[in-house]
Amino acid sequence: MDSGAVSVHFDSGHLFVDLSDGQAVEFPLGWFPILQAATTAERGNFAISLDRQQLYWPDLHEEMSITAMLRSLPDSTRH
Image 1 (cartoon, one colour):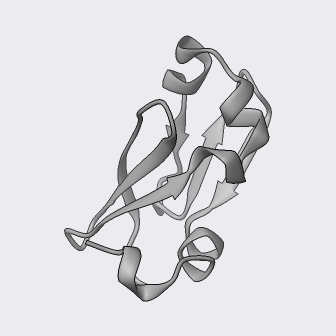
Image 2 (image 1 turned 120 degrees about the vertical axis):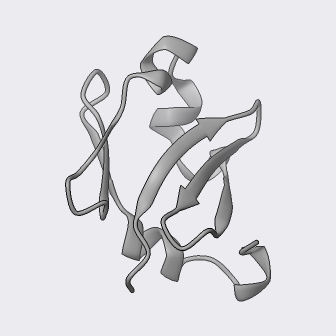
């Protein structure tokens, strides 16, 4: 997949990832128990890898692959 992450944000129940190809995808926060239990500050302290294929939360020692995340979604959830 050529799309990479350019931005991440949250609401009370979702993780949102904006992709370099203009798509926006959302994931139920319940899929990510570590992020669900994290504070707003911990969620806000993240890094996107230079190739835009990994998300990393250093305070939580949590890393996610964009490719794996996108493969877990039904096609209808991409905007």
